[in-house]
Amino acid sequence: MSYYRLLKSNARIRRLWFAQVVSELGDWLSFVALMQLITKYSGKAQASGLLVIIEMLPMIVLAPVTGVVADRFDRKKILIATDLIRFFIPFGFLFVDSPERLWVVYVLTGLQFCVTAFFEPARAALLPRLANEHEIVVANALMSVTWSTMLAVGGALGGLLVALVGSSAAFVLDASTFMLSALLLWGLAVPALQDSSRRVDSEEVTFLEALFFLRRQLRVAAVTLVKAGLCITGGSIWLLSVVYGQKVFPIGKEGAISVGLFYGANGLGSVLGASIAAICLRRALNPLKLMLAAFTLRSVFFALWAVSPTFVLAISSLVCAAATGSVLWVSSTTMLQEMVQDKMRGRIFALEFALLTLAVAVSIGATGRALDDWGVDVRQATIAAAGLAALVAAAWAMVMLFWNRLGCLENSSPLQKIVSIFLEKSK
Image (cartoon, rainbow, N blue to C red; front, side):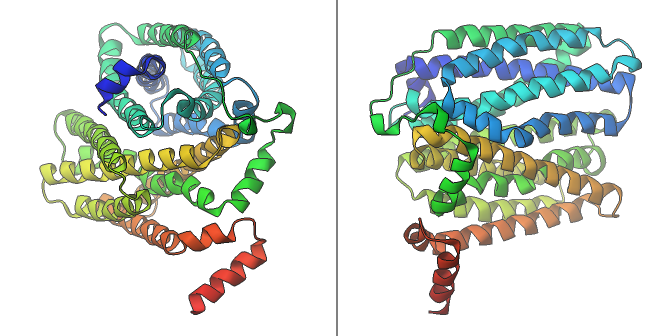
């Protein structure tokens, strides 16, 4: 099933997709404009880094709340409510016209991403209700492709819009995209749950219950950690792309063109990877083996990137590394949606988003510190990322080795699990 056929045949997915397109387009327009404001009134790299940190923190801190909300209340209403709240926030950026008011950018950005933290788990948990069983893989791939495309298109349009008209236009347009998204979601028809056993009393929904669930369901816990394993090296890509573009293969003034091409390569790789994952999963390829191959190849492509003597080879290596990340993203999302019941999905996806965001923050922080303070050059940092990716691949290989054993150990006590695994290794 192609993306076009899915969008043509499933009106519910079509509405959700259109809402994603306009909303994420506005997000990237606004991000570029905010970076321009920070550069204009601060001029410090740390000020830009602070903005990224503020965007990440809500996903981590609010996960226990956002997951419970996604499972306790109507997810469609959560999506609409968060869009309507976010409609008002970008207008506040219009009042930032001096260095003394730069604090407004950080406060409003924090507020906006606190609201976004409720949106993402609800959307991920709602998707399986909108797609048929044979559509879910393609639907997940489509959402991943759309994010990557909006990264490239929104970033380029944001830079052009700010350069020609100014940052204010980007903020107004960003606000309008949230309103349009809310209107699209308003008409979304969500099928009712047919299986009454999957419904739960809202008063019984707690985040602690999700943690107990993962302790019992070890295979679900392993899949929940896949994106964190991906992002522990994924965060470094953003910093490494800038350094490679500016210092190793500079094209244009201060390497601006080559930096843009490296980011474009990341987006292209993500699109290709999502399509590859959809094809493989639709052909019933074992997702465990697919993810092991992706983890392993990710390490190889990072290593190739580190030793690339030419710009073309470096770009090609990045495309391939980004493709493996997209394969992991789509595969793990699809597995979680199939393995976790509807009543628990919101909390599991909230926890997953928190863990992957934390991994990105650690990756960016460690890479930046290594490049700035530890005397590590960019090629050495890339080799380190390749080694870390290899360790993650080895960890996933161990998960696969004991996959059946993990299923048998579900509902066992922690001591029983340790003893059983020890005996298995002894054999």
